[in-house]
Length: 119
Image (tube, rainbow, N blue to C red; front, top):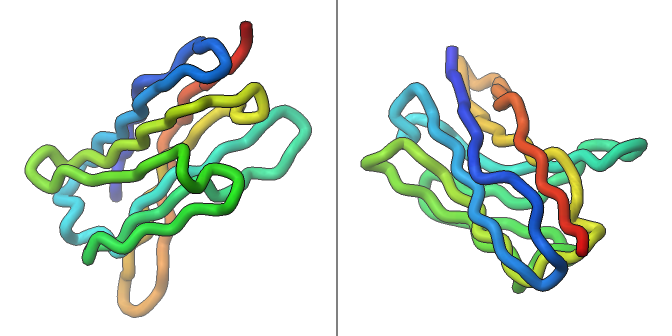
């Protein structure tokens, strides 16, 4: 089992920045990929960013150039630096860990942290 604890959400004005953190209960070097997803009210959960064990990252066009995902293996923590925030970035942000268990991918989720972008 993997426990993920997110932190860093809050209220920020448009154009501002926030950094989310996700602390894992296991060595993240053993995790196939970690990432961030978000879900706004009335919408489906969507991908924000992922990072694999070799450091490869992925972003959708909606956040590319504004958000940066990174990992600190020594702290078993993944970060999401969010700059130039827009009101449409408002959502609950969830940390995800994807493990390979006997060739099967298994997802674990954090409890979520609210990000609100508003003036």
